[in-house]
Image (cartoon, rainbow, N blue to C red; front, side, top):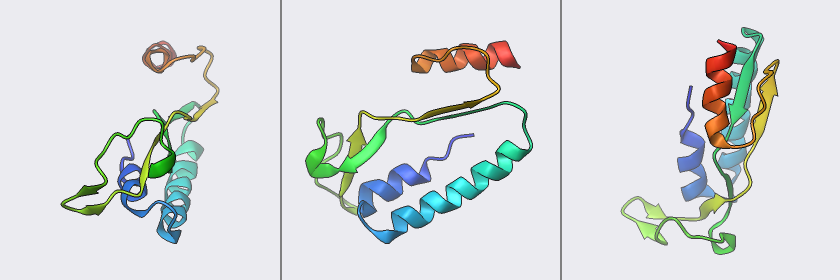
Length: 101
């Protein structure tokens, strides 16, 4: 499953309470999904930061939908539960899934 809403929320609402509210909602759903599975991989392809702090700005300052407040950060997360395959780069996720299922 892919949850892309957090990415959009953070681009337009970085630093606002709504970001934390959506993290809590997604966390709640993830915990429910994890409880039904013996094996899980939770991964992000990037983190987030204030647009002014981003090393590379991926979007313009404004779009037709409004001001861009957050942008991509190099930090990401990887959480595995009962996955034996080592994951060091994004491509390894494919091999881990193929080998574990």
